[in-house]
Image (cartoon, rainbow, N blue to C red):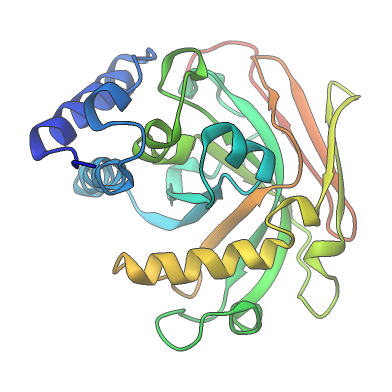
Length: 268
């Protein structure tokens, strides 16, 4: 299968940049880079990341997507994907999630790992990444798509920074000697009505499996995981819409609760 050329990658970058600059969703980019060309999709993501870094953004970690077997089947893939987390995406300290920064937000409950060691060499298996985790917290990932109506395939979401938006981290920290990520259960509520549930096993069988996959993949890409970084390890259950005014709350066993209140207005 022929890979997309540099012109196609540049056009996809331009299309997604327009969505960011103008605050409006755009058409999918798979018409430019194809539905299965992961190399081209990550090339788009890297260029968008480079532009953000040139503008002063700071990388604080990564997010893992497509950890659900059901979603993988839907998109015709057999592996997760990843995106970059920037410091300004962390809205944990904000009283409200700024709806104005989002186009088509949805929320999902996750376990976030914070690393105490670099993952730059050796056998990056589950045992190794477990030893590199400083602590874990309950998290809400606020996913968002610059692609109109969430009409995405694999290359669309990868190019669009794995459909990243914002994230919220809870205060309570637990070490991995205090709980097992794969044993967690999750309930997600919108305005106090349960709308989703799941478990650690829904995330590649164990969120640590997802972390190990990311550690190996990031190293292969030449940008390994580093001490102090946050890793959103993947959804524990189905994501749900999060329009302005919604209060989203997740309960994750052992880790406790994490809540996000979305501002009523879309004023950024």
